[in-house]
Length: 60
Image 1: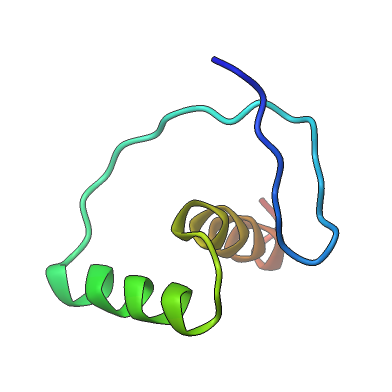
Image 2: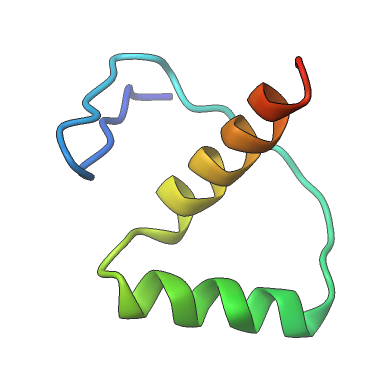
């Protein structure tokens, strides 16, 4: 899979992205998509950042 780069606020990275799979409630998906659109952010980048911040705040 080709390497991808974040396009948000100079957070360029050469780290390879991998596919993960999981299900969320429809209402959560809608909120994610609305937030991403309102903030001109790619949904993939938003999810990556959200999971990273969640894990970091909990010692993960």
